[in-house]
Picture (cartoon, rainbow, N blue to C red):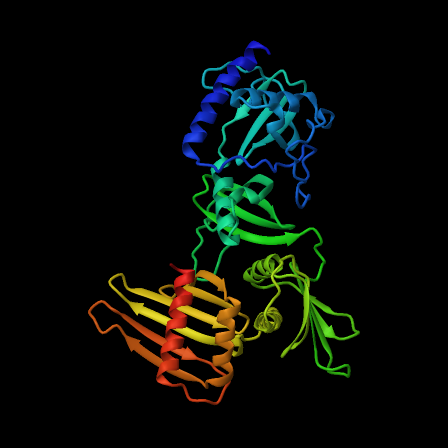
Length: 444
Protein backbone atom coordinates (compact mmCIF):
# COMPACT_ATOMS: atom_id res chain seq x y z
CA UNK A 1 0.00 0.00 0.00
CA UNK A 2 1.46 3.44 -1.02
CA UNK A 3 2.57 6.12 1.36
CA UNK A 4 -0.42 8.31 0.43
CA UNK A 5 -2.89 5.58 1.34
CA UNK A 6 -1.15 5.09 4.69
CA UNK A 7 -1.55 8.80 5.40
CA UNK A 8 -5.23 8.65 4.58
CA UNK A 9 -5.70 5.59 6.76
CA UNK A 10 -4.55 7.70 9.68
CA UNK A 11 -7.02 10.44 8.70
CA UNK A 12 -9.77 7.83 8.35
CA UNK A 13 -9.00 6.41 11.78
CA UNK A 14 -9.45 9.87 13.30
CA UNK A 15 -12.78 10.32 11.50
CA UNK A 16 -14.02 6.91 12.59
CA UNK A 17 -13.02 7.58 16.17
CA UNK A 18 -14.96 10.86 16.16
CA UNK A 19 -18.02 9.18 14.65
CA UNK A 20 -17.93 6.37 17.21
CA UNK A 21 -18.04 8.93 20.02
CA UNK A 22 -20.86 10.90 18.44
CA UNK A 23 -23.14 8.05 17.36
CA UNK A 24 -24.14 5.13 19.50
CA UNK A 25 -24.99 2.24 17.19
CA UNK A 26 -26.49 -1.18 17.93
CA UNK A 27 -24.42 -4.36 17.59
CA UNK A 28 -23.41 -5.31 14.08
CA UNK A 29 -26.23 -7.06 12.24
CA UNK A 30 -24.78 -9.77 10.05
CA UNK A 31 -27.73 -9.60 7.66
CA UNK A 32 -25.90 -7.15 5.42
CA UNK A 33 -26.73 -6.76 1.72
CA UNK A 34 -24.85 -8.91 -0.74
CA UNK A 35 -22.30 -6.88 -2.71
CA UNK A 36 -23.30 -5.85 -6.19
CA UNK A 37 -23.86 -2.76 -8.25
CA UNK A 38 -25.91 -0.39 -6.16
CA UNK A 39 -29.52 -0.41 -7.33
CA UNK A 40 -31.86 2.07 -5.55
CA UNK A 41 -34.88 0.22 -6.97
CA UNK A 42 -33.98 -3.03 -5.22
CA UNK A 43 -36.68 -3.61 -2.62
CA UNK A 44 -34.94 -5.80 -0.07
CA UNK A 45 -31.27 -6.75 -0.40
CA UNK A 46 -30.64 -10.48 -0.04
CA UNK A 47 -29.19 -11.32 3.40
CA UNK A 48 -25.67 -12.72 3.55
CA UNK A 49 -25.56 -16.06 5.32
CA UNK A 50 -23.23 -16.59 8.28
CA UNK A 51 -21.12 -19.22 6.50
CA UNK A 52 -21.42 -17.86 2.99
CA UNK A 53 -18.27 -17.84 0.85
CA UNK A 54 -16.47 -14.50 0.33
CA UNK A 55 -18.25 -12.22 -2.15
CA UNK A 56 -17.19 -12.40 -5.78
CA UNK A 57 -14.84 -9.43 -6.19
CA UNK A 58 -15.45 -9.39 -9.95
CA UNK A 59 -18.60 -7.39 -9.22
CA UNK A 60 -16.57 -4.27 -8.49
CA UNK A 61 -13.85 -2.17 -10.16
CA UNK A 62 -10.41 -2.40 -8.50
CA UNK A 63 -10.81 1.09 -7.04
CA UNK A 64 -13.96 0.04 -5.17
CA UNK A 65 -12.21 -3.02 -3.73
CA UNK A 66 -9.27 -0.83 -2.72
CA UNK A 67 -11.59 1.53 -0.82
CA UNK A 68 -13.19 -1.45 0.93
CA UNK A 69 -9.75 -2.72 1.89
CA UNK A 70 -8.74 0.66 3.34
CA UNK A 71 -11.88 0.74 5.53
CA UNK A 72 -11.51 -2.90 6.62
CA UNK A 73 -7.88 -2.36 7.67
CA UNK A 74 -8.74 0.86 9.51
CA UNK A 75 -11.50 -0.93 11.47
CA UNK A 76 -9.54 -4.14 11.98
CA UNK A 77 -12.12 -6.24 10.12
CA UNK A 78 -12.11 -8.82 7.39
CA UNK A 79 -12.95 -7.30 4.02
CA UNK A 80 -16.04 -9.50 3.78
CA UNK A 81 -17.47 -7.64 6.82
CA UNK A 82 -17.64 -4.46 4.72
CA UNK A 83 -20.57 -4.25 2.28
CA UNK A 84 -20.54 -2.12 -0.86
CA UNK A 85 -23.93 -0.39 -1.06
CA UNK A 86 -23.23 2.38 -3.54
CA UNK A 87 -21.00 2.90 -6.60
CA UNK A 88 -21.22 6.01 -8.76
CA UNK A 89 -18.91 7.21 -11.51
CA UNK A 90 -17.67 10.74 -10.86
CA UNK A 91 -15.27 13.39 -12.16
CA UNK A 92 -13.36 14.95 -9.26
CA UNK A 93 -12.21 18.58 -9.63
CA UNK A 94 -8.54 18.17 -8.67
CA UNK A 95 -5.79 15.76 -7.72
CA UNK A 96 -7.07 15.70 -4.12
CA UNK A 97 -10.45 14.44 -5.35
CA UNK A 98 -12.09 17.61 -4.09
CA UNK A 99 -11.09 16.82 -0.49
CA UNK A 100 -7.86 18.72 -0.08
CA UNK A 101 -6.86 19.89 3.38
CA UNK A 102 -6.03 23.50 4.22
CA UNK A 103 -2.63 24.34 2.77
CA UNK A 104 -2.42 21.13 0.72
CA UNK A 105 -1.23 21.54 -2.87
CA UNK A 106 -3.70 19.79 -5.20
CA UNK A 107 -2.96 19.41 -8.88
CA UNK A 108 -5.39 21.19 -11.19
CA UNK A 109 -6.89 18.36 -13.19
CA UNK A 110 -10.15 16.52 -13.68
CA UNK A 111 -9.76 13.08 -12.11
CA UNK A 112 -12.31 10.44 -13.21
CA UNK A 113 -13.16 7.93 -10.53
CA UNK A 114 -15.87 6.68 -8.19
CA UNK A 115 -17.96 7.68 -5.22
CA UNK A 116 -18.11 4.52 -3.09
CA UNK A 117 -20.63 3.91 -0.30
CA UNK A 118 -19.73 1.27 2.29
CA UNK A 119 -21.65 -0.21 5.21
CA UNK A 120 -20.44 -1.92 8.37
CA UNK A 121 -23.33 -2.94 10.59
CA UNK A 122 -25.24 0.27 11.32
CA UNK A 123 -22.49 2.63 10.15
CA UNK A 124 -22.10 4.09 6.67
CA UNK A 125 -19.02 5.52 4.99
CA UNK A 126 -18.19 7.27 1.73
CA UNK A 127 -14.92 7.28 -0.20
CA UNK A 128 -13.72 9.06 -3.30
CA UNK A 129 -11.29 7.24 -5.57
CA UNK A 130 -9.61 7.57 -8.93
CA UNK A 131 -10.19 4.89 -11.55
CA UNK A 132 -7.28 2.70 -10.45
CA UNK A 133 -7.69 3.03 -6.68
CA UNK A 134 -4.30 4.69 -6.28
CA UNK A 135 -5.87 7.80 -4.80
CA UNK A 136 -8.47 7.08 -2.12
CA UNK A 137 -9.92 9.65 0.26
CA UNK A 138 -12.60 9.23 2.94
CA UNK A 139 -15.49 11.69 2.98
CA UNK A 140 -16.22 13.13 6.40
CA UNK A 141 -19.13 11.06 7.68
CA UNK A 142 -21.84 13.73 7.90
CA UNK A 143 -24.71 11.41 6.93
CA UNK A 144 -24.33 8.72 9.60
CA UNK A 145 -26.20 10.68 12.26
CA UNK A 146 -29.09 11.35 9.88
CA UNK A 147 -29.31 7.70 8.80
CA UNK A 148 -29.12 6.46 12.38
CA UNK A 149 -31.81 8.92 13.53
CA UNK A 150 -34.18 7.90 10.73
CA UNK A 151 -33.56 4.21 11.43
CA UNK A 152 -34.30 4.65 15.14
CA UNK A 153 -37.54 6.48 14.35
CA UNK A 154 -38.64 3.74 11.96
CA UNK A 155 -37.72 1.04 14.49
CA UNK A 156 -39.90 2.80 17.10
CA UNK A 157 -42.74 3.27 14.61
CA UNK A 158 -42.80 -0.40 13.61
CA UNK A 159 -41.77 -1.78 17.03
CA UNK A 160 -38.80 -3.60 15.50
CA UNK A 161 -36.70 -5.85 17.72
CA UNK A 162 -33.57 -3.95 16.68
CA UNK A 163 -33.06 -0.91 14.43
CA UNK A 164 -30.82 -3.02 12.19
CA UNK A 165 -33.93 -4.88 10.94
CA UNK A 166 -34.54 -1.78 8.81
CA UNK A 167 -32.24 -2.40 5.82
CA UNK A 168 -30.76 0.71 4.24
CA UNK A 169 -31.67 0.82 0.54
CA UNK A 170 -30.69 4.35 -0.43
CA UNK A 171 -29.24 7.52 1.06
CA UNK A 172 -28.67 10.59 -1.07
CA UNK A 173 -27.89 14.25 -0.28
CA UNK A 174 -30.71 16.69 -1.04
CA UNK A 175 -31.28 20.43 -0.73
CA UNK A 176 -34.75 20.74 0.81
CA UNK A 177 -36.64 23.93 -0.12
CA UNK A 178 -37.83 24.87 3.36
CA UNK A 179 -37.54 24.23 7.09
CA UNK A 180 -40.21 21.50 6.79
CA UNK A 181 -37.91 19.50 4.49
CA UNK A 182 -40.48 19.73 1.72
CA UNK A 183 -43.18 18.11 3.87
CA UNK A 184 -45.41 20.86 5.21
CA UNK A 185 -48.28 19.77 7.46
CA UNK A 186 -51.43 21.49 8.64
CA UNK A 187 -50.71 23.99 11.38
CA UNK A 188 -46.97 24.13 10.68
CA UNK A 189 -45.16 27.21 9.45
CA UNK A 190 -42.38 26.39 6.98
CA UNK A 191 -39.61 28.93 6.53
CA UNK A 192 -38.50 29.32 2.88
CA UNK A 193 -34.84 28.41 3.28
CA UNK A 194 -32.53 25.84 1.76
CA UNK A 195 -31.82 22.99 4.19
CA UNK A 196 -29.05 20.57 3.31
CA UNK A 197 -30.03 17.04 4.27
CA UNK A 198 -30.67 13.55 3.05
CA UNK A 199 -33.35 11.34 1.49
CA UNK A 200 -33.07 8.00 3.28
CA UNK A 201 -34.90 4.84 2.23
CA UNK A 202 -35.18 1.67 4.33
CA UNK A 203 -36.73 -1.70 3.48
CA UNK A 204 -38.78 -3.64 6.05
CA UNK A 205 -40.83 -6.72 5.18
CA UNK A 206 -40.95 -5.90 1.49
CA UNK A 207 -41.97 -2.25 1.90
CA UNK A 208 -39.80 0.82 1.45
CA UNK A 209 -40.05 3.69 3.97
CA UNK A 210 -38.83 7.08 2.76
CA UNK A 211 -37.46 9.70 5.17
CA UNK A 212 -36.40 13.31 4.76
CA UNK A 213 -33.75 14.54 7.22
CA UNK A 214 -31.65 17.60 7.81
CA UNK A 215 -27.88 17.38 7.84
CA UNK A 216 -27.27 16.13 11.39
CA UNK A 217 -30.45 14.06 11.85
CA UNK A 218 -31.94 16.39 14.46
CA UNK A 219 -35.03 16.67 12.25
CA UNK A 220 -36.42 13.49 10.67
CA UNK A 221 -39.73 13.27 8.80
CA UNK A 222 -41.42 10.21 7.30
CA UNK A 223 -42.21 11.18 3.71
CA UNK A 224 -43.92 8.09 2.35
CA UNK A 225 -43.97 4.36 1.76
CA UNK A 226 -43.99 2.28 -1.41
CA UNK A 227 -43.66 -1.29 -2.63
CA UNK A 228 -41.91 -2.89 -5.59
CA UNK A 229 -45.26 -3.38 -7.33
CA UNK A 230 -46.47 0.21 -7.53
CA UNK A 231 -49.77 -0.80 -9.12
CA UNK A 232 -50.62 -3.61 -6.71
CA UNK A 233 -53.96 -3.43 -4.88
CA UNK A 234 -53.72 -4.61 -1.28
CA UNK A 235 -57.38 -3.97 -0.41
CA UNK A 236 -60.51 -4.62 -2.44
CA UNK A 237 -63.98 -3.74 -1.11
CA UNK A 238 -67.08 -4.77 -3.04
CA UNK A 239 -70.34 -3.26 -1.87
CA UNK A 240 -73.94 -3.54 -3.03
CA UNK A 241 -75.41 -6.46 -4.94
CA UNK A 242 -74.72 -7.92 -8.36
CA UNK A 243 -77.25 -5.53 -9.83
CA UNK A 244 -76.68 -1.93 -10.82
CA UNK A 245 -75.65 -0.75 -7.32
CA UNK A 246 -72.56 -2.99 -7.18
CA UNK A 247 -69.46 -0.87 -6.49
CA UNK A 248 -65.79 -1.82 -6.22
CA UNK A 249 -62.97 -0.01 -4.46
CA UNK A 250 -59.30 -0.99 -4.87
CA UNK A 251 -56.52 0.55 -2.78
CA UNK A 252 -52.75 0.31 -3.07
CA UNK A 253 -49.88 2.30 -1.64
CA UNK A 254 -49.95 4.66 -4.60
CA UNK A 255 -53.63 5.56 -4.35
CA UNK A 256 -57.08 4.12 -5.04
CA UNK A 257 -59.49 3.34 -7.85
CA UNK A 258 -63.26 3.02 -7.68
CA UNK A 259 -66.32 2.60 -9.83
CA UNK A 260 -69.19 0.33 -10.80
CA UNK A 261 -68.45 -3.37 -10.92
CA UNK A 262 -67.37 -4.42 -14.40
CA UNK A 263 -66.58 -0.85 -15.51
CA UNK A 264 -63.33 1.04 -15.93
CA UNK A 265 -62.36 2.29 -12.48
CA UNK A 266 -61.46 5.91 -11.82
CA UNK A 267 -57.99 6.23 -10.27
CA UNK A 268 -57.32 8.85 -7.61
CA UNK A 269 -54.20 9.64 -5.56
CA UNK A 270 -54.17 9.90 -1.78
CA UNK A 271 -54.66 13.46 -0.64
CA UNK A 272 -53.34 12.77 2.85
CA UNK A 273 -49.87 11.29 3.48
CA UNK A 274 -51.24 9.56 6.57
CA UNK A 275 -53.29 7.09 4.50
CA UNK A 276 -50.46 5.22 2.72
CA UNK A 277 -48.55 5.08 6.00
CA UNK A 278 -51.59 3.53 7.70
CA UNK A 279 -52.02 1.07 4.84
CA UNK A 280 -48.36 0.07 5.14
CA UNK A 281 -48.88 -0.64 8.85
CA UNK A 282 -51.94 -2.78 8.04
CA UNK A 283 -50.04 -4.70 5.33
CA UNK A 284 -47.18 -5.35 7.72
CA UNK A 285 -49.31 -6.58 10.63
CA UNK A 286 -52.37 -8.27 9.11
CA UNK A 287 -52.31 -11.46 6.99
CA UNK A 288 -54.16 -11.99 3.73
CA UNK A 289 -57.86 -12.65 4.41
CA UNK A 290 -61.41 -12.25 3.12
CA UNK A 291 -64.34 -11.20 5.27
CA UNK A 292 -67.94 -10.09 5.01
CA UNK A 293 -68.29 -6.70 6.73
CA UNK A 294 -71.19 -4.25 7.20
CA UNK A 295 -69.61 -2.18 4.40
CA UNK A 296 -69.29 -5.07 1.95
CA UNK A 297 -67.08 -8.00 0.96
CA UNK A 298 -63.48 -7.28 1.93
CA UNK A 299 -60.37 -8.87 0.41
CA UNK A 300 -57.00 -7.93 1.87
CA UNK A 301 -53.42 -8.89 0.92
CA UNK A 302 -51.21 -8.61 3.99
CA UNK A 303 -47.89 -9.95 5.23
CA UNK A 304 -48.65 -10.46 8.91
CA UNK A 305 -49.47 -13.70 10.71
CA UNK A 306 -52.19 -12.94 13.30
CA UNK A 307 -55.71 -13.57 11.99
CA UNK A 308 -57.88 -10.44 12.29
CA UNK A 309 -60.89 -10.22 14.56
CA UNK A 310 -64.30 -9.41 13.11
CA UNK A 311 -63.96 -5.90 14.53
CA UNK A 312 -60.66 -5.39 12.68
CA UNK A 313 -62.30 -6.37 9.40
CA UNK A 314 -65.11 -3.89 10.04
CA UNK A 315 -62.55 -1.17 10.84
CA UNK A 316 -60.51 -1.89 7.72
CA UNK A 317 -63.56 -1.67 5.45
CA UNK A 318 -64.53 1.67 7.00
CA UNK A 319 -60.92 2.85 6.61
CA UNK A 320 -61.25 2.14 2.87
CA UNK A 321 -64.50 4.11 2.69
CA UNK A 322 -62.85 7.04 4.52
CA UNK A 323 -59.88 7.02 2.15
CA UNK A 324 -62.26 7.25 -0.82
CA UNK A 325 -64.31 10.02 0.77
CA UNK A 326 -61.14 11.96 1.56
CA UNK A 327 -59.86 11.58 -2.02
CA UNK A 328 -63.19 13.06 -3.18
CA UNK A 329 -62.78 15.97 -0.73
CA UNK A 330 -65.87 14.84 1.23
CA UNK A 331 -66.40 15.59 4.91
CA UNK A 332 -65.25 12.82 7.28
CA UNK A 333 -67.33 13.87 10.30
CA UNK A 334 -69.80 11.01 9.78
CA UNK A 335 -66.98 8.52 10.47
CA UNK A 336 -65.90 10.14 13.74
CA UNK A 337 -66.93 8.34 16.93
CA UNK A 338 -65.30 10.40 19.65
CA UNK A 339 -63.91 13.89 20.20
CA UNK A 340 -62.01 14.51 23.45
CA UNK A 341 -60.36 17.75 24.47
CA UNK A 342 -58.17 18.67 27.44
CA UNK A 343 -57.28 22.27 28.22
CA UNK A 344 -55.56 24.10 31.06
CA UNK A 345 -52.74 23.10 33.35
CA UNK A 346 -49.82 25.27 34.40
CA UNK A 347 -48.36 25.19 30.88
CA UNK A 348 -51.69 26.01 29.22
CA UNK A 349 -52.18 22.73 27.40
CA UNK A 350 -54.69 22.25 24.61
CA UNK A 351 -54.90 18.61 23.54
CA UNK A 352 -57.38 16.99 21.17
CA UNK A 353 -58.09 13.31 20.51
CA UNK A 354 -60.33 12.03 17.72
CA UNK A 355 -61.24 8.37 17.23
CA UNK A 356 -62.80 7.19 13.98
CA UNK A 357 -64.77 4.10 13.06
CA UNK A 358 -61.79 3.14 10.90
CA UNK A 359 -60.04 2.05 14.10
CA UNK A 360 -57.51 4.89 14.10
CA UNK A 361 -57.05 7.58 16.74
CA UNK A 362 -55.35 10.95 16.17
CA UNK A 363 -53.90 13.32 18.77
CA UNK A 364 -53.41 17.01 17.98
CA UNK A 365 -52.17 20.16 19.66
CA UNK A 366 -55.05 22.65 19.48
CA UNK A 367 -52.92 25.63 20.52
CA UNK A 368 -52.17 25.93 16.80
CA UNK A 369 -54.75 26.79 14.16
CA UNK A 370 -55.34 24.43 12.49
CA UNK A 371 -54.35 21.94 15.21
CA UNK A 372 -50.93 20.32 14.63
CA UNK A 373 -50.70 16.54 14.49
CA UNK A 374 -49.09 14.98 17.57
CA UNK A 375 -49.38 11.32 16.61
CA UNK A 376 -51.72 8.48 15.73
CA UNK A 377 -52.57 4.99 16.95
CA UNK A 378 -54.28 1.93 15.53
CA UNK A 379 -56.81 0.73 18.10
CA UNK A 380 -56.26 -2.87 19.25
CA UNK A 381 -58.80 -5.60 18.50
CA UNK A 382 -59.96 -5.83 22.14
CA UNK A 383 -60.42 -2.06 22.37
CA UNK A 384 -62.28 -2.06 19.06
CA UNK A 385 -64.71 -4.63 20.40
CA UNK A 386 -65.45 -2.41 23.39
CA UNK A 387 -65.66 0.72 21.22
CA UNK A 388 -68.05 -0.80 18.67
CA UNK A 389 -70.25 -2.16 21.45
CA UNK A 390 -70.69 1.40 22.74
CA UNK A 391 -71.20 2.75 19.21
CA UNK A 392 -74.01 0.31 18.46
CA UNK A 393 -75.77 0.87 21.81
CA UNK A 394 -75.22 4.42 23.07
CA UNK A 395 -76.74 7.50 21.44
CA UNK A 396 -75.06 10.87 20.97
CA UNK A 397 -74.03 12.74 24.10
CA UNK A 398 -71.76 15.54 25.27
CA UNK A 399 -70.13 15.70 28.68
CA UNK A 400 -67.74 17.96 30.57
CA UNK A 401 -65.63 17.53 33.66
CA UNK A 402 -62.97 19.37 35.59
CA UNK A 403 -60.12 18.47 37.91
CA UNK A 404 -61.60 21.05 40.30
CA UNK A 405 -58.23 22.43 41.38
CA UNK A 406 -56.19 25.52 40.54
CA UNK A 407 -54.20 25.01 37.33
CA UNK A 408 -56.12 21.79 36.75
CA UNK A 409 -57.53 20.50 33.48
CA UNK A 410 -60.92 20.99 31.88
CA UNK A 411 -62.23 18.10 29.76
CA UNK A 412 -64.84 17.96 26.99
CA UNK A 413 -66.18 14.76 25.43
CA UNK A 414 -68.42 14.47 22.38
CA UNK A 415 -69.69 10.99 21.60
CA UNK A 416 -71.16 10.18 18.18
CA UNK A 417 -72.83 6.83 18.79
CA UNK A 418 -75.30 5.14 16.47
CA UNK A 419 -77.43 3.45 19.13
CA UNK A 420 -80.63 4.70 20.78
CA UNK A 421 -79.75 4.03 24.41
CA UNK A 422 -79.13 6.92 26.79
CA UNK A 423 -75.69 6.90 28.32
CA UNK A 424 -75.43 5.99 32.00
CA UNK A 425 -73.05 7.71 34.40
CA UNK A 426 -70.85 4.62 34.56
CA UNK A 427 -70.73 4.35 30.77
CA UNK A 428 -69.84 8.02 30.50
CA UNK A 429 -67.01 7.45 32.98
CA UNK A 430 -65.81 4.46 30.96
CA UNK A 431 -65.74 6.46 27.72
CA UNK A 432 -63.85 9.31 29.41
CA UNK A 433 -61.28 6.87 30.75
CA UNK A 434 -61.02 5.12 27.38
CA UNK A 435 -60.23 8.41 25.65
CA UNK A 436 -57.63 9.39 28.25
CA UNK A 437 -55.96 5.98 27.97
CA UNK A 438 -55.74 6.15 24.17
CA UNK A 439 -54.34 9.69 24.32
CA UNK A 440 -51.77 8.51 26.85
CA UNK A 441 -50.67 5.75 24.47
CA UNK A 442 -50.07 8.31 21.72
CA UNK A 443 -48.55 10.97 23.98
CA UNK A 444 -47.10 9.26 27.08
